Length: 381
Ligand code: SF4
Picture: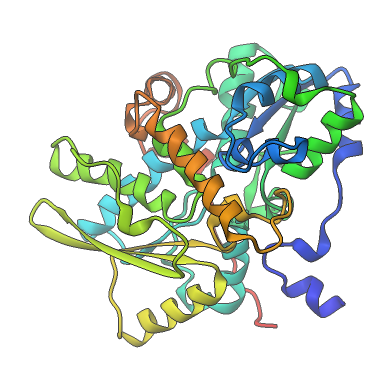
């Protein structure tokens, strides 16, 4: 109904397929590039009879090449970029430059919910765009410059576990110089349908690697796909920025798992930093009401609209409420992190190069222009 269409924060009730549009772009003379979110690679295989949580990154890249994309990149790269900007924002606020708690801002289902239901808290979410939007902004500036093509001749496609990302891509707040950062979003299920339509035998494909320079990522970028992962990745970087010391234990297990509200305290320097994770919007409402009333006090809160985080997103293969499937996808995500040589976003050499050669300072003028956004209070429905 109209009411439902306007209130569903994740967009699940208004999904429109973009598959035809993507096929059309692939048959055009534009440069069509694609990025894939962290949660897609641990669920895509299920559409081809593979076990939940199987990491199919290499086969997915090969399939995308066969479909005709000109370059294949990784949203995990942009997740690292998000963490560098967001951890800096967190550190600045801890130094007194801005309000605490900082709330994560990478989930458009949550951003829609916040703008409608908690518009009095609109000044506390991070101003960082979500990773796939940061990717689009960098692709249409830095990458276009590198490839010597005009932004209007590039089409950016995102493969996401998420339906709300389709609406996010159309937000006017996310336009840059009159154009959207991301042109089209397809879900994990839509990608699977394209692979099937093209007659590609997914399970038999060899592995391939992402392209350079936006294909390199750390383990911190990978864990964005599971509830608790964004804030865990933020703390890995914020700790080292604030203390100048190496963080020895990278896993914050209190923040992992499918519990509705999770919390932990991390000692950073001489400060006890309180962190919370809200898993799903019902838990978010409960937690934020406690923060508003003063019953709870946190320094940082991660919010993800879908239970389990993006591994349980509305664009993923249906799991029909089977929690064991979400657990196995989460295990896949954490195995990607565990197997990476670099596991902290600020150590990603391609991110370091991006700042050195193009963006300048973290949170500097160019980073602000391309990587940050604003929110708009909307009437409660
Ligand atoms: Fe989309 Fe992930 Fe948010 Fe769900 S949790 S709405 S999949 S960004």
